[in-house]
Image 1 (cartoon, rainbow, N blue to C red):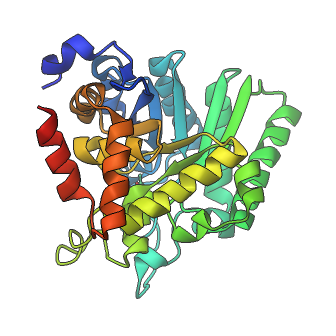
Image 2 (image 1 turned 180 degrees about the vertical axis):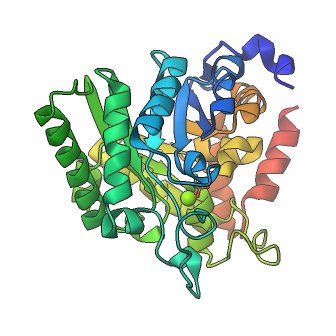
Length: 324
Ligand code: PEP
Ligand code: MG
């Protein structure tokens, strides 16, 4: 399939109405790295570090992790890699960690909550990332931040890690960016000061949608019940776009919907300019984006909402058919 899109692989994704959309890829395993040149991705928008922990039967050592992260940065060369700190708990249980018996694991002790309550592993991971960067730029993203204070605390851990590495005489990253995932509705309503302070945000649409509609993403019975193109969900996303614009905070979207062409088009139409997806989706998504006038599409979306449509999908599909 990637050959099919070969002719546009190295072209920037510019829509018919001249909007530049940045196309990034999601990764997590070393096996994903060759996709970076072959997919035409402009960088790694989400590196899921927990995958390296999940494929082992014991806790990886700091030096081992530093080696892996360094190889990822080598493969990316001058392209940016967003390393997401451990996102464990809920559906991602480490075989060598005592499982928590929780009635609602998706709402439980997971991701940054574990990282802040038991910072040992996160500190080790931050140290591994700083050492892997070894004087190169470093980008760190925290998962599942639900309120401003959690971001502040997580950010403080990075600052502590930097100070420690400096004391130990290690080379520091030439540039450091620290951001958060927006995957709980609460964060969309955080004080504007949060948007001012966070250096970038990435919408984790998989989790955000599950919490917004209260529909378990793992539960076959309900997981497809609510459409991503539901007007309520698009309004939430649009609000995040606006709040980021006010603060000048770079925003991306890295949930699975970024890799679905129709959804990606609508995300662009409500204002997203950076999408991160599985590498195989970049070609098809880019191809559709380059043929679309997303300003015209946002008008279609606006009208569907004004009419009181529940989801804008039928209107969008009809518009797409009329374009051919
Ligand atoms: C998300 O929630 O949309 C996301 C990108 O993270 P994950 O799928 O790893 O939870
Ligand atoms: Mg998530």
